[in-house]
Image 1 (cartoon, rainbow, N blue to C red):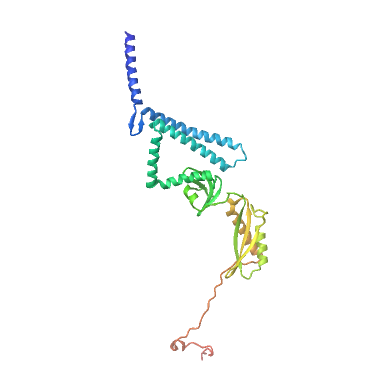
Image 2: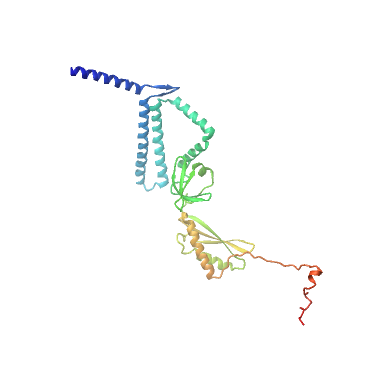
Length: 314
């Protein structure tokens, strides 16, 4: 009796399981896209595994490249980013295949729809993404570079798909769209030669001794931290100003990201040495010319003239 009941329950549960399995695998067709619950679940699992694999592969490649001292950090960052993007792209295609059973024709339709969306308002997003790939492949800006864009200056922390993160000296993160870095003027202090020349303009009074000013400026650049001795500091006499003599002190450094502090240290030295050598900075001269006014006779009757003696009191 128990065997018969168990057999009946087994058949019943088997039929329920078969119905559930059939419902999970049932495909619903929407145009050229086929969707099923099981396919959707598998697609989600594939996408999660893809993200984990992308992160693992990027870390693995980075660890391998760190053992190669001849590869600079910027190139290492680019290779790791491209590896992650490649894995994510393959994973997304597999996810779409598992979820919607898409083929190349369906992908063409999806990309056509995306292109229409880009034409109607996503062009800025597309430009940022395309600029991100340009930055990674062409590498005009690399992670760790010191850049100046507009009034902002800082170190490049990361180059993402759409934006670039720049950290200032105040540890403030500036988020810059990649299209701005590609389309606008950017100063890269660390692009090629690690050395950079710093120009410090200075104007002195027009009656100053030129040789004394030149020797003092060169002396002010000596002993300053991060200022190179080779090439040595130089002074250029730029022009005769209206009320000044304009010079320019040129120094070289292999730490261009520290150029604000280097300027400050040299300016401190210039101020101190100018005081010691009695060199005056330029001060605009102002002259005031007073002209005699002709007053009416009624107003000028009681005023003494140049040929008059002041009245005396009897």
